[in-house]
Each structure stands twice: as structure tokens, then as C-alpha cells.
Length: 324
Length: 55
Image (tube, rainbow over all chains, first blue to last red; front, side, top):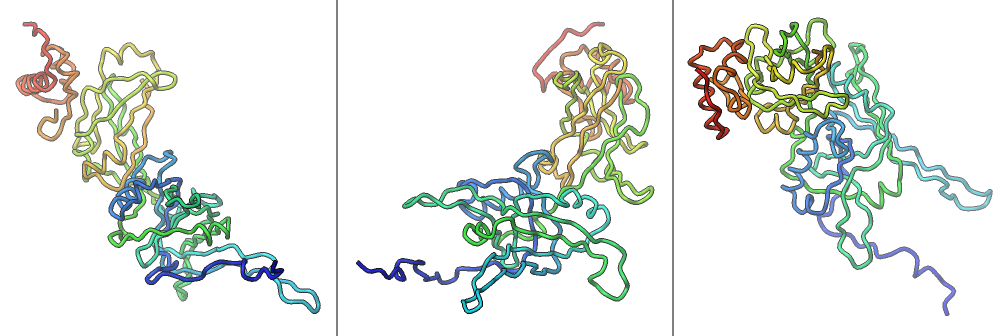
């Protein structure tokens, strides 16, 4: 019996022609979506599933949040630590965990929205400049094709920057997104890519938050509802009425009452109000009158997916609590 | 049922109302009684429901 174990360590080292490697990141998507083998069966199906995941309601565990397009990448992976005995070989003690900083140029609103991810640990997909999307897929059982779900690679995210520029250095004033992967093993051994030649970074855009408010006091069961994008600019909130008012009125909204908002309240009509640039929402007067004074009504707008199907794209509207 | 691209009426609810009830309930939109009658008829057709109209 041989006492030389050299031939039983390691494994075959052959690569496959035209295989690829991680290239320069262009976009990252953060969120919990896990794609099944059916969803990643082909690039067209996967592309549609990725875009659909970006349009899910906030709070949905499978939603993906696209980050801004990356304009500069810096590799900040710490060097592996090494050590050696006085006369011994250098041995690696700790392998550096992959880490990167991405510079993006964004406005104040988008920066403030990104801060929701500051200091958070989430799964992250990375779309690189050769149209490959990188994620994690667990190892398959022996002698079994791998049909495990494909999901993001767990990473710790920080957001900073977006301060004043110094007027001489283009790198000042940008937003810095730091991504630090939790497991070097997962990054190296489980890193799995999808080739998405028809996907463009511009297809992966985050939704804008739209807020509902009451621009005027209601008249019994008739409420005025305004939809705006709050801006970090004095007097600069964007009213989406001109662009989407008629489209919003034509869709189905719902309303609920009760301690847990589980009782449906009928909406009898939704109309455009061109004077106030808002919607007029009318509730069933019989049901409305039956509510006690001070009762609250939760008015729920159409979801981002429904809006998108009606060509009202790029927004998610939050609900509003109205008071009788 | 969307009337002239401006008012989205809940067809099922409209069809459950008499014409008079509907006209009274939705009078704040500024439509004429004839226009509301047109909407009422269209919603009844859409919802497949009928309720007797009072004089």
C-alpha cells in the first residue's frame, strides 16, 4: 500500500473552452428572490423573472432592488494573512473575503433611498459587463443534475458619500456602495452565473415611491387623493397626475376598514380632478355612513405590477389611511 | 366602466342601484342625468344585473 497521498489530493484541472469569469460589475440587485430551475431554464424566461421580481411590492420577500449603474469599481478584498515559522514555508492563515466598492453618480433622492440598505446584510446578484448575472447555487447530490435554486450571494452592504464635490476631483461627491461577501467559500465554490445576452443594465431600474395625500378636506364619502413623489427639494414634490392621472383612475383600487383593515369598503367610482390635479374617490355612502365617527379607511392603490401592465411604469404607490 | 376616459365607475355596484339611487350618489361628478343614465345602462349590461327603476 502506498504511503504517498499526493495522487489522491485535489482533482482534475481541465477547463471548458468559452467558459467565462467574473468581469466588471455594472449593476447589483439586492433581495431575497430565489429562482427555481424552471425560471432559469433559458435566458428569456430568467430575464422575465428577474424583471418581474424588481416590480414586486416592497415587503415581498422575493422582491429584488436594483442599485444604480456602477461607474467605477475598486477591489477592496483584504490580502490573505500569512505566517511562517522561522525556517518554515509561508502558510496562508486566513483567506481574504471578497469585497468591492462601487462608485455611482446619483441624485439626493436616490441616495436617501439607498441608505435603507446601509449596514444591512442581504443576498446580492451582480450583473457584469459581459451580460452575465452572478449568484449562488448550492451543490447538487452526486450523480444528479443541479436543479437547486439560484439566489443572491450573501453580502454586507454600506452606503456613503454623496457629499459636496471639491471641484477638481471627479471622484468626490459620488455615492460609494461597499459590498463585502460573507463567505469566501460560497463566493468561490458556489458562484454560478447566468448568461443574459438580451438584458441591459437599463432594464433593471428601481421603482420610485409615490405617496398618497389629501389635498383638500373630504366631503362625507367623497375624498380627494393626490399622488406625488416626495423630493428632497423645497416645494419640489412631483405630482404624477399629468402623466398618470387618467390611467390611475381607470384601474381598480380597494379600500378596507376595521381594526385590521379586513372589512372591504366599496369604492363606487374614481374620477380625475383636473383642477386639483388629483383623483376623486367615492365610497359607498350606505357603508360609509355606518362607520363610526373617526373610523379609519385604508385606501389601497394598484400594485406596481398592475400599474406596469397598464403602462404606468417605474412607480410603486403606498396606501393611505383616511379618517371619516 | 370608464366614462369618457375620466370616471371609472364600479359596474357591479352601479348595477345594484336603481337609476335614481345611482344619480343621487354620483351627482358630484357634474354629469347630466342623461349621462348618468347612459352609465347606469352600460354598467347593468356589463354586470348582467337588473334592479327595478322607480319613477
